[in-house]
Length: 416
Image (cartoon, rainbow, N blue to C red):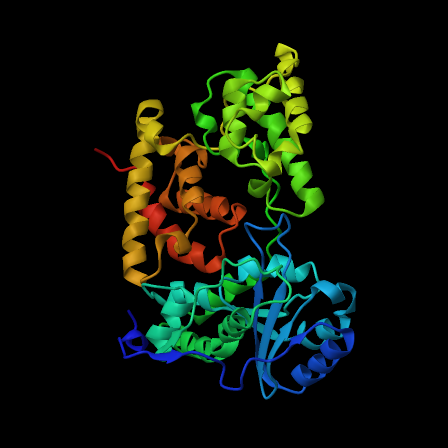
C-alpha cells in the first residue's frame, strides 16, 4: 500500500458537485458539448455504460465525459450515432482517462471515438502496487471519498434512463481526473511512470481479440456430455440461439439458457411435444421458437458420423499445467523455477505477477519456447533467446528489461 492509500474516513459522494447534467441526445446538443469540451483544459475523463447480459451487442448506450473548465456531459449515442463527428474532432486528440479502459475502448471506437493518448487508472493502480484497484476502492483509499455504486450491471439500453442511474453515471467521472493525478504521482515516486506509459499505449493500440474457434464449446455444462452426437446438438442449438440473439439484439442467455441446451442434447427430443416437456422449452418465450429448436436437434441427429465434432480439440500451446509432471517433468521443473523467480520479482517491485509478464507467455516459454536447455550454450545466448521469445509474444520493453535477466538466471542449466 502506498502512502496515499493510508485509510481515512471516507466522505460519501452522493451527487455530482454541479448536479446531474441533462442527457444529450440531438446532434445540436452534442455539437455544443464538443465546443465546450474543446475550450476546456487538461485530460478528458471518459466512461461508457453498456447493456451486458441484456443485449447481444457490446455498444455503448451512454457516454460520460468530464474535462476541467467544461464540466460533465452525458451523451446518448443511440439516436445520433451518425452525428458524433464534432465530438470526435473535439476529443480524439486529447489524453483520455478511463478506469479499466479495455472494457470501454472497443465500443467507443465503433462510434469513431479513439484517444490519442490514454491513462488507465485501474492499470496504473496495479502498477503502483495498490491492493484494491476497483474504482470505488481507489477513490476511497486515495481521495477519501465514498462513491455511490450499484447500477453498473443495469440494462443501460433502457429508455428513458432513470434519474438515479444518471446520477451514478455522472459520479463515475466526477473524480476520475483527480484520481489520475494521484495515481500518476505515486507512479512517478516509484519510478514506474515510463512503464505505465508503455502499458497504456499497449491497451490503446491493441487489436480486438480474434474470434474464438468453436465458441459453442464454452456452453456451461457441456463437460457432462460424453458422445459426439450430443456435442453436435449443442453446436446446432448454440448457432440457432446466436442467430436469433443477434437478429433481436438480445443477450443469448435471455433467448435460451445454456442449461436448456445441454438438457436437449441429453434428452434428444424428436417432436415439438417432447421438446416442450423439457425444462425451459415449455416456457412462453421459448415456445414461439419450438420449431427452430427442434430443427437444430434434427440437423445434429442426421449428420454423418464424419461430420460430428470431435469430443476434444487439440491444445493450442502447452497442456494444462497439472499434466506437465507426467508428460514432461523437466518442463514442469522449469515452470516451477520460472514461477518462483517471477513471484520474487513481483514482490520486489510490488506489481502483480500477471502484470509483470503474461502467465501464458511464461508457460509457453517453459514448455517448448526455447531450444534444448542442455545445449543452449552460454547464459548470454539463453538470455538472447528468451528476449526474442518474449518480444515475439508481445511483452513490452519494460517487461522484458525486468523479466529476461531473472528468467535467464532461473532457467540456466546448472551442473548437479
